[in-house]
Image 1 (cartoon, rainbow, N blue to C red):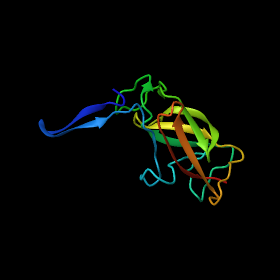
Image 2 (image 1 turned 90 degrees about the vertical axis):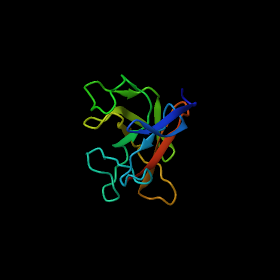
Image 3 (image 1 turned 120 degrees about the horizontal axis):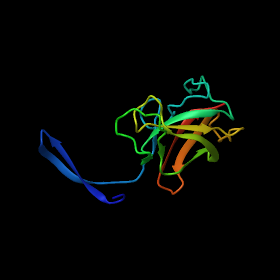
Length: 160
């Protein structure tokens, strides 16, 4: 059904309020941000578990923990709305990461322990040194995207 419109019905107490087609895609990743806007500073944890901010930047060569949703089907398939079990659910689609446009290693991508299924934790190892971007000292842009070109997302973190 991916890529084809699917019927969507909005109902209240069994009464049809609206019906319209929606496009269905296999994945459309999004990274969580500190202000919940979906733009700017990512909701990221530094390797020591502290929240990544300008006052507490990540060091080059360390791992940062990002949180995402919309990564598509997971294997094994989890139960919607449940908390992760012992099994590590991972996206079926293969993902890559980049920091300021340079490849970065994804060390873990899968369910986020203690959070609801659908929230995916992504541990990304920052390059050492972090490739600079002109005009953005102390900021790095992290992007997550699928191998097959099925979409991607990005946001910023504080680095030193």
